[in-house]
Image (cartoon, rainbow, N blue to C red; front, side, top):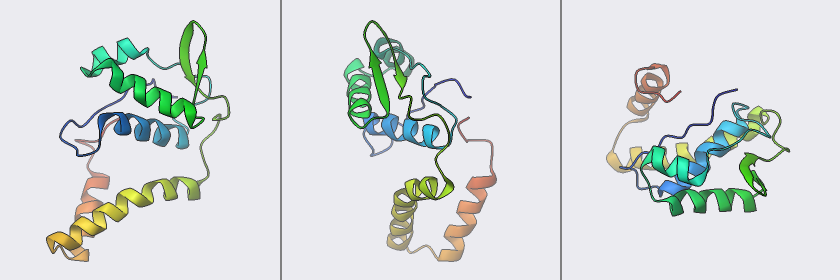
Length: 133
């Protein structure tokens, strides 16, 4: 089980709170983070990521309303108990589909051939130098 740490891409068009939400959902779906695991407090995470606390608060609140997180009075938020094991492979693949569809659309708009796009994707998948843990 990996410790809960987030990474943000400030250059991304994706809002920061959405990046946090999507990252948590992916890690939980992969079984890297599990039910009952405590999250950093809003203040701690905001300081660590150097973002406004409302960004963290918004992500946590939306994740709670979607059933991904559970609030405990006076205690840190935790991943909801229903997430004890990795999601089935097909669910994880479906979670990746929108990202890959955006990449397909952008490749077509840029006039990149399928062979070039696949080559780049293969390179990125096997290149460990820039991948988050």
